[in-house]
Image 1 (cartoon, protein in one colour):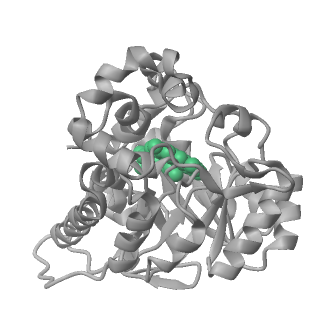
Image 2 (cartoon, protein in one colour):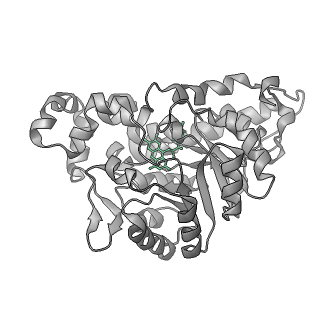
Image 3 (tube, rainbow, N blue to C red):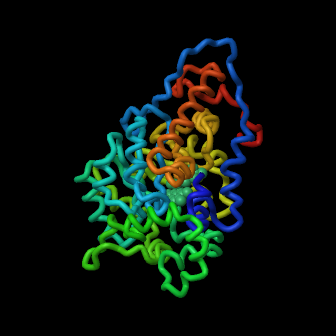
Length: 373
Ligand SMILES: Cc1cc2nc3c(=O)[nH]c(=O)nc-3n(C[C@H](O)[C@H](O)[C@H](O)COP(=O)(O)O)c2cc1C
C-alpha cells in the first residue's frame, strides 16, 4: 500500500538502502539461518509480551525506531506514529530529522518518547534541543553514532530526491510527472504546507535549519566519544548509543555511561557490507556482559524475527520500516495496524513455541549455526 500511495522518490527513500543494498537484504535474510526448538504439548492461553526498557514497563518487546522525514510519508508523521505507539503500550523514538515540533510529538502520545540526537547544526543546536527535550518530558536520549556522513542511497540519486527537496523549479521538472501519478499523496502534502522544515534543529544566531541539504548538514555532524562525554554532562536521564556493531564499541559505550546500546547498521542505509544486525548481536551481548541493556534493529518484518532476536540476547528491538510502511499507507491507522500485526505474530509464535512470555525466551528455543559461536 505504501508503494502505491507514495511517489517513487519518497517510497524508495523509505524502502531503499546504501549502494548495492547487500546489508539491507542480509538484515532480513539472516533470520532464516536460525530455526526454532519448540516445546510442544504445552497449553498456553495467552502469553505475556511485556518487556522492561530503561525502567519503563512496555506491553510489547519492540519500540518504534527513529525514521527521518516521516512527515513526507504522511502529514501526521511523527505525531501520529508516537500516538499509535503510546496507545499500544510501547515507546517511540523521535528522529532529529523530524518535520514536527518535539513538544507536539510528546504531547500527542501517552507512552514514553525518546529523542534521537544527531549533532546537526553543531553543539549549540544540540544543547538547545536537549534542554527542550528535557522540558517537554522526553525520557531518554538516543545518540546515533553510525552517521559520520550520510550513506549513498543510489535510488535517491536516480529518483531525484535531492532535486525534489532542494532543487529549483527547472531541476524538478523531470520528476513532476511521477509525483502527479500519486494525487492522494500530493494533495495531502500540499495541504500540509509542502516541504516540512526541521523545527527541532535551531542553530544559535541562525534560527531553524531549513531542510535543504541534509547530507551536507550530516557531514558536519559526526558524533565522537568526546561528544558523548559532553552530552552525558548535559543530560541527566538515560542515554542509548545506537549503531553499535562490535564488542569494542559496545564496551566504549558502556564506559561512556550508556544505559543501553542498540546493535544497528541503520537498516542497511549507511555503510554497505556491514554484517546483519542479528549476526553482530552475540558479540555485543558478550561484551556488554549485563552492564547495560542491549537492543537491536534491522530487518524486523515479522513477530518470528523479534522472537529470534530476543532468544539471541536482545532485551528489546526497534522496528523501522515495518511501521513506516504503515504510516505511509494510512497514517495513524496504518501504524496501529502494523503494530497489531506484529503483536498478533508474537502471541501466536510464543504459543506455538510453548513459551509463556517474552521474558522466558532464551537460546534454548533456537538452533544457531555452529559457525556463529
Ligand atoms: C526512512 C528511514 C529513515 C531513518 N532515519 C533515521 C534517523 O533519522 N535517525 C536514526 O538514528 N536512524 C534512522 N533510521 C534507521 C532506523 O532507526 C533503524 O535503525 C532501521 O530502520 C532499522 O531497520 P529496519 O528498517 O529494517 O527495521 C532510518 C530508517 C529509515 C528506513
